[in-house]
Image (cartoon, rainbow, N blue to C red):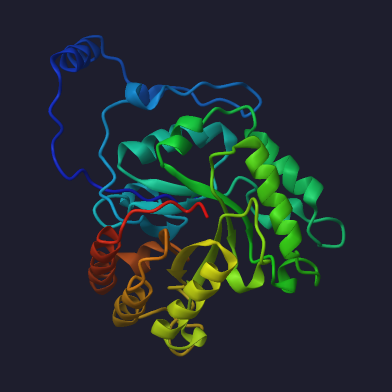
Length: 311
């Protein structure tokens, strides 16, 4: 699972009524952290945004983070993520993400292994069954306030190796987006594939994805090309890097200088709506060089204009 968050930029002044409520809460020793989670089959109502616990504000710009990032490292560097979270944990996790000023892209269908048929090919029926696990959960407030960046529909549908030798067509990706919109009209729909692999006319798909690695060639040329493709297709764009296997030579971990140089190239464009890397590794991200490089990218991401991942 992955999520990313951000520190508060300042202290919010409390109104007297709010302060009184907080004092009463402390006096009665209530602890929201013990709230139970619920199954997806049970209707769940989330408190409106105005009634949620006091939280850090998103710092602005576009969210930056990684796949599979633990909550413990969300903060001053990472404030966005890709999240594969179970239905029972969804509301609790979204509340924590929001409380830390973060944003997350949700993979509601989970791992592709759960929606393959007997031949190892993509199954639309099984994909819908996976997504339907969340139908009874009311997380609309997190969609409306931007905590949820969008719905990660499917990973690399264009790669036949992922789907028993038969790639998932652009028209089928549009069907996935249509189904998602039928359940959550306000949530952006995102596919992890470069925009050039998608069709030319979209009613339901909002965003494509460009994941850079060394073999893509010059990073500055790459971002210009994928942004141009996204604009022609009428799609928003998520960007990021394969930091663990995308270095030079290809297949190696990116060095700190590669992370900073190539990440800065991707962030030189104002077009992307989020910056999410594959994938979090505690040893890799704990090194001082990578920390410094990612901090530099965070500042650049924060200085971008904030934008939705909706087309």
